[in-house]
Length: 394
Ligand SMILES: [Zn+2]
Image (tube, rainbow, N blue to C red):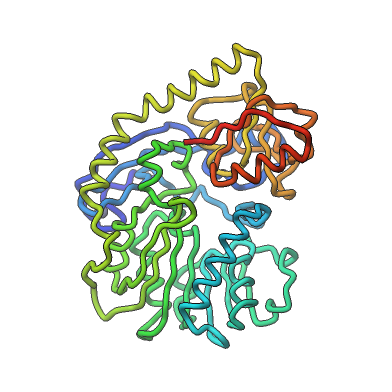
């Protein structure tokens, strides 16, 4: 696989190196069944480069052929009450904005179907969900009788679906050739001006501000700010009418309709190119210190004999452990998703434990990979008679 030499969003060849990690696991949410398999997990290179012309950041060493999304992929966050509340709010918001009853909703990358099922329950829409990781046994809702799930990767085969509403959450960032992908989405929508598309994905702006290197990993080939996302949609013949940050500024939500040709920027959040360039420069100069700061804290905890656990076994944990090369320094990796308990973390081979296993581990420090869950994690620990120091990742 050769290096990507032009911006996948705007085709500009003038790219700037930002950050490189020579060897990281190519997947972070694929569950593995043994420590040996976890340690031998395929690795790839993270070579993040920035396009100053459009504000897009991507992995120039990304090779999609090493990615294998399957039912063994555990991305769902619905075991967190905080996340469930967010999903319900998003559903409510979309139901209020658009009339979806009896309409056809298509969800690209529907995962286990959580959002599509919730939307169908709330609005009475019909729906088609497409995802290679779909698990039919996880759907238990009467609304599912109006839904069809296809265990497949979305691509040109699905361009004739003609939906009234197309949703794609936390999927675009896994795609390398983003403009080609959006062209297929535009074809799927067709010349039906009332069709709405809604995309949700992580916001690069917060990652840059916090120098959150644990939010940069192989599964995510593509990183957008509000502006670079809107610019891509406008270039690919969409008219963007809503753009916002949500979930403590961690995610972006974009809503658009098809247009006959490229469209011009009109929303306040789009004008972020100068800010993004400055944030990239600050990230580049500040990332070494950020990393060293964590190394020093971990060394201090080790010297004090304190047991450190990580809460959250998703991509953030895999990336954090890989970048810092951590192994036995971390006593446990905890996750509330019962389907992850007893499985193994790709790369370092930590065994994933559930909250109920923690009284045995007795951690002194818990690194909270996503600070938005701080409150519920504190409650979960207190309920088990534990009061370790909680350290939110920032
Ligand atoms: Zn570009």
